[in-house]
Amino acid sequence: MKKILTTILLVCIVSICTSQETKFSIIAGYSNAFETVKIDAVNLLNNYEDEISFDVKKETINDSYSGFNIGVSVETSISDKISFNPSLLYLNVNNTNFLQAPIFLKYYLNNELSIIGGPQLTYTLDEVFERVRKLNIAIGAGISYNISERFYAQASYSYQLNDYVKDKDYTQKIHLLNIGLGYKL
Image 1 (cartoon, rainbow, N blue to C red):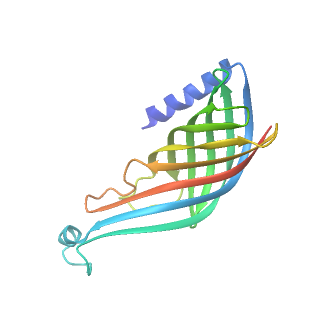
Image 2 (cartoon, rainbow, N blue to C red):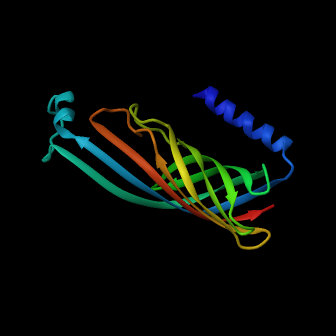
């Protein structure tokens, strides 16, 4: 995993250094985490020797938590309509702290409106149980709208690809919605 992160960082640095036009910005806004938990209680009980009791055999639980995000973004032109747009965001959702790195491409439909999308890494900063993955991978997509030469609004949704918890009888995914305002430096 460290090799993947190092490679991504290297690609970002090289593209920024060799680009024709690079814009830096700060962004802040609202985050919402949509959590889906699936439990196979029968197998879970067998694994823990009846230490836990459930009234149901299988259950899916959906919940939603609100918070905020703040971070930095870089936009590097690849062509007239396409830009490389990685960001690094700090998120606090339900008193849990995350670092999020969307590695998006941006396609301009016109001068104001663009579509964004690509892979996204989310790292849990807090201490977690042994079975919880601190680094998670998602695919994200969204839109960005230039309000003026300096200000823009952006919304993206990411769908987590891996399970947050390493347990075959208990799966958890956290999908994130980010809505924010950015200021180009």
